[in-house]
Length: 121
Image 1 (cartoon, helix red, strand yellow):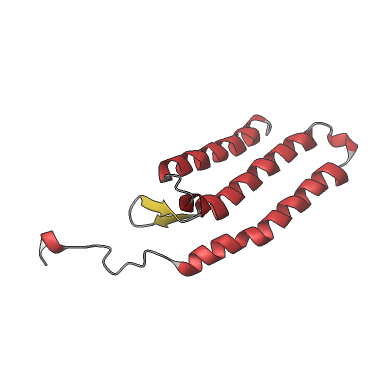
Image 2: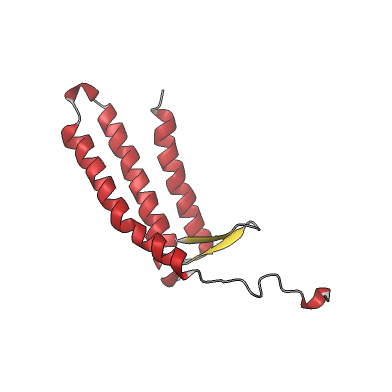
């Protein structure tokens, strides 16, 4: 095998249709679950919880935003063998670069984890 003609991804499926379909359709059941969680936090939580229910509401809101962003907005396709990937979501169709999409994903993860860490003591 000649090193100059070696193509490691020559036979690699670069557009995984089943993965993309399942990822996009997962929003159909995850958003109603988040909506039910918001309903339970606001209306079914006891008054004894006090301000803790608002902290839970913020946590669920950030988690839902991250879920929708990753399943519909960015939809990352990762290469497991190498540290790389690309996005195949709605934001890619709008022409938003992968760097900006990755930044927004990291920002949403940070906001969600910040609420969890600050109020988990």
